[in-house]
Image (cartoon, rainbow, N blue to C red; front, top):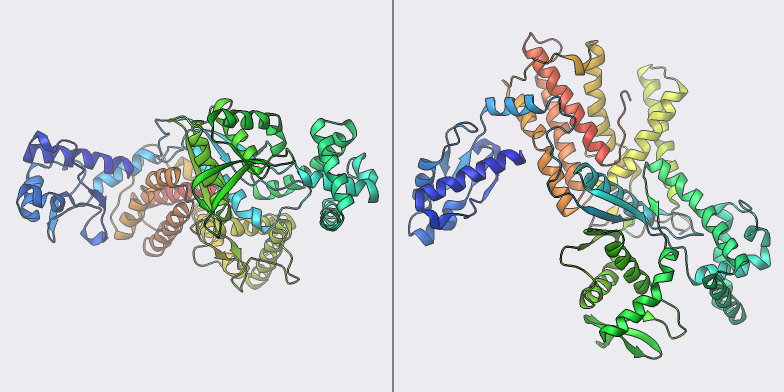
Length: 585
C-alpha cells in the first residue's frame, strides 16, 4: 500500500495547488491510514491545518480540494467527514488489480530500496570462555532479524559478531590453567565448554583474592599482547573451543555471523590514543588518559571521565569501540552502523559516539544507531534465573522449549489418533520450539522488558509462533485437500473480491511493503510480528466465512489465489524473522 499512499499524496498535492495556487506547492496533505475502516482506507487531514492561514472553515477547504481532486482510477468518490477530514476508500477493482499484479512476484510487491548502501549490524557478541546465556538471546535474534530485513531491502549487510576475546580475563584463565590443567593450553578439545566455564569462575575467585596470582595474570596478558608463542597458542585454543560451542547455538537459531572480536582491533588502539591527543580532547586524570564529555556526571555531580588508556597503559572498552568504529567507517566503508545491545549499555554508546563526533571521526553521510533492548524476566519480574539463582544457559533454554513442544505434540497426536514418524516429530518439535522462543521475543517492543513463559509462547492461540505456523499449515492443507498446486492455477486466473472478509484480507496482504519499510527505518521487529498476527486473524476469518474448495468457479480459483498469497506472505514474513515454516504440524 506504500505505492498507493504515495500516488494519493501526489494527487492531493496537485489538487491543493489547483485549488489555492502555486504557493501551496510542497504542502504536506497529511495523508494517514484511516482510524476507522468504516470511514475508508485513508484520511487526509490537511484542510484542518490550513484553516487559519486561509481564513476559511476546514470543511469548506476540504470541499474545494475535493473539487480539484481526481482519484477516480484508485478510489471511490471522496467523502468529507467531521470538521474537514477527506476520507478515501479504495475501489475493489483497484485492490483486485494490485493483488493480481503481485500474485506471481517472489517479493510480493515489496520493492528494493533505491538507496542501497553498506550497513553493519553488530550483534550477539558473547565472551570467549563463557557459555552463551539468556542475556545473549535478544541481541542474537533481534540483530539477525534486522540484518534479514536490510538484506531483503537490497542493502549490503555485514553481520558482525564482536566477541569478547581479549583482555585481563585471558591472562587470568591461562595462568590458572597452567597450574590446574596445563593440557588445555596445548591440546585441542582437552576441555568441554562446561569445564572451561567452571575453571574461569575459579580463576576469577583466585584473581580477586590472591595478589600474587593477580600479578602473574597481568604478566600473562603482556605476553599475550606481545605475541609470545605459547600464550598465543593457548589463547587460540580457548577461542576455538568457545567458537565451536557458539556455533551450536547459532545453528539451532539459524543465525549467520562473521566473527571479528576485540582482538582484531588491538593493533589499532595506540593510534586512537595518539589521534585523540592531537585533538586536544585527551587529559590526564590520576595517571589515566581520559576525556570529559558533556552531560555525564557521577552521583556527586562531578564530571565523569571516559577512560581511554588506564594508568598502567592498558586500554578500555571505549578505546576498542573507537578503533572498531574507525575501521568500520574507513575500511568497511559502512554508511549505517547498528549496535544491538542491552539498554544497560546506553550510556556507554552515548559517550563514545559523542567523543567520536567531537573528534570529527564520523562523516556526515555515516549514521550510528544504538538499538537497545530490555531484559528477559522470570515470573517474579526479576532477571530470568535458574531455581538455584544461576544465569540460564541459552542451550538449556532452547532444549527445554523443544522438549515441551515435543511433549505437547505427542499428546495431541495421541488424542487425534494420528501416527507420525520419529523424523516428523523431531522436526516439528525443533522448528516450533525454537520458533516459539524467537517469536515471543521479537513480538515484544524491544525497548521493554518481558516475562519469559513457555506456556504462553507455545500456545496455539494468540500472538505466538505456533499460531502463525498453524495459519500457514492451514493454507497448505487446502492445497493437499484439493490435490492441487497453488503455483499452477493458471496464468490468466484473476482475483475477484466480493465478500467483506475477502476485501479485508486483500487490504492486509497489500500492507507488507509498508511494514517492511517501517522496520527498515525504526528497527522494531515487533511491527512485523503484529502485521503477521493480524494477517493470520484476517485469513482465519476469511477461511471460516468464505468456502474455498466447495465454491463455484471463478470464485473457487480466486479464493485459492488469496490462500496462496497469504501463505507466501506468511512464509516471507516469518523468514524475515528467522523462522522456518512447516507444511504440516
